[in-house]
Length: 173
Image 1 (cartoon, rainbow, N blue to C red):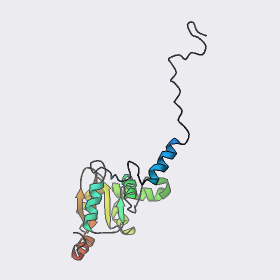
Image 2: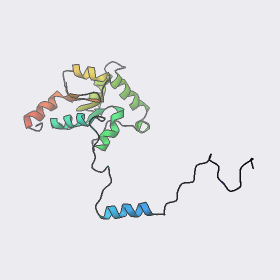
Image 3: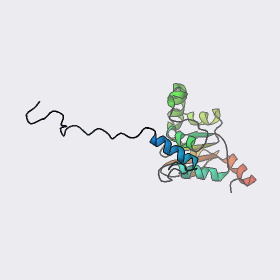
């Protein structure tokens, strides 16, 4: 032992071991809450409008249009959490390299007509794209598309024909 150290005494260089909890305490507490109808702290919470594309999704829903979305890779998880079928999400390995490259080319406008091809090939009716993505400027200038919302997080475009149908049927009120 080093000078001044005694056997069985902990030196200050090691943290104290964690306190032991009784086995099953948390599980019992959760079962009691479930039986009483008490839900978790996040059960009814919606994502913050300031930090998520919730305002963009709300603006789209207000149009009354339904259909297939072309979304940015990073917004797929949010859409899934909101029960919206996605074009793509963060599980890139599941989609394959060719699809990922096609999507990247379309949203980044790295190949001519790649965005238009994706919109047609997958029968896209609306878009939810991260702000700053090059495809937004092209969508703003395509006559068949109309921007219905935009902020620092996301931009929404909808096919003009669908907006007109929705307005005529009174669904977008």
